[in-house]
Length: 73
Image (cartoon, rainbow, N blue to C red; front, side, top):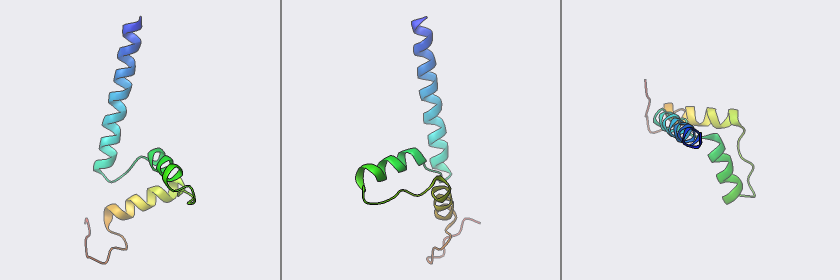
């Protein structure tokens, strides 16, 4: 039974890594990691809400507001 739980934990960890990697490839970061980073390293700043974070990442992905001319499509 212990080996089954270990395998399930390993599979869960692998799945999370694959999903996180896929999100990063399409420009979607991990909100939890972002919020923790802001709280730890910038305690004077309030982190963006999850919706604001998503929009920020989407805008960065597609070059919204970028004056250098980058556009995905």
